[in-house]
Image 1: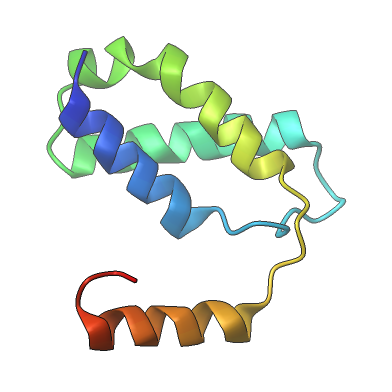
Image 2: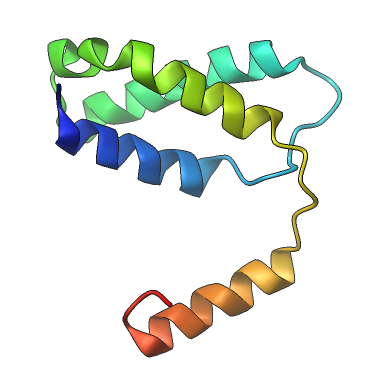
Length: 93
């Protein structure tokens, strides 16, 4: 188990899959599969070994599908404001 990879993947999912951003053009499963491939390609660029990444594939795939299927309305302005406030507070709250 690679906790370092899981933390990196969790951050990648948060940064690259905003809630409610799934267009109706592709299914959730197709988008999750495409983004899983992108995550593992980015992981290789980030310096993770293929063995390290493949070991966690079974744990990451459901997380990506969950993030893709999230149809929560996403308010970009609120997200940006919260990000700015977190940077000002430096504690993430």
